[in-house]
Image (cartoon, rainbow, N blue to C red; front, top):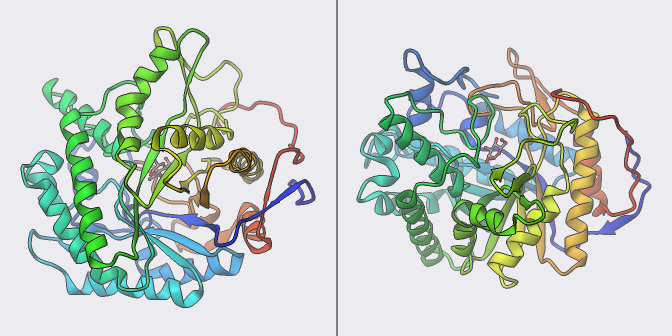
Length: 428
Ligand code: BGC
């Protein structure tokens, strides 16, 4: 493993250092959600079901203790609409109390909570009546945001309304297309975890795009009216569309509906969440495959840590300088934790380069705190902390200690840091 002796960049005051999870991926038994229904229907197209996940619904105190003990100061976690409103109009007081206890638990441990209201999954009843295409979808989501204020109280500063709305809109497009063709729909999967999903292959559903933007703006208003101190934003999947020479226009045309329209919608927000993992090269005729011989990860993505810096630069170009950036996800699916360390150090160095160039970055939250349910499969392990699927025992990996020590020392590695030599290896 790399040591921490390379050049280091002192973190600005208040910079958030932590890790992220989402409710469905770690809680387990999210039985009132649409995805649970899909996972468990006979002949499901989803290869593996979420089941108990990491049992964080019960084990969240241990998760938070571990993160704090490792040196982190921030925990991004989700609250689940399907638990809070398992039937339309019925608010589960027990679920509200559960999430309220999590918020308090984070604060009491010295962790800043960053709370996501919606991370891919919706209540079954919401999807059954048309999901984001239903006429009153925006009002229903705004009402849920109003209920969520009870969870947030005075303790939460950072709120993310909808995770990766651009992926949600793509998923709807795929569902619509497959439904028209009479084939089963793929999982509500932002990525390629269990169900092959190529973000460059389809265009987001424009109706869903418009609705998600309205839902975000409505939730923003609800939250700010409840407490102007809430810092509200949303988190966008940055695909880092890289133009091959001469393909600049083609790449820009890819980015526009899949990413930029969602970034533009953040211009009035309090912050914008950047989520970056890899790049997508675009040639004159569209997307190109991963370069021959390139190292790939357990999700089949190219090992390309510099995606983070490029995503921040692109975000800044589109959103403008008035909106600070929080990196709300960045990480790698690998069973070789040394590659996670190497990936993270290079990603952080690319982030620092952008900060030096003037980007207003307020935090770095690694994906993921725990090995978890990667939308259809447990095989791609993104976690800083390993989870035993039978006992749920948690074991921090060396990468967790390394990143935690950077958080504790308030430094990031920057350019010039020793980069471990490696030979490209296919699909670890
Ligand atoms: C999603 C996460 C997912 C991660 C890795 C992001 O698109 O927000 O839920 O696990 O990428 O695939």
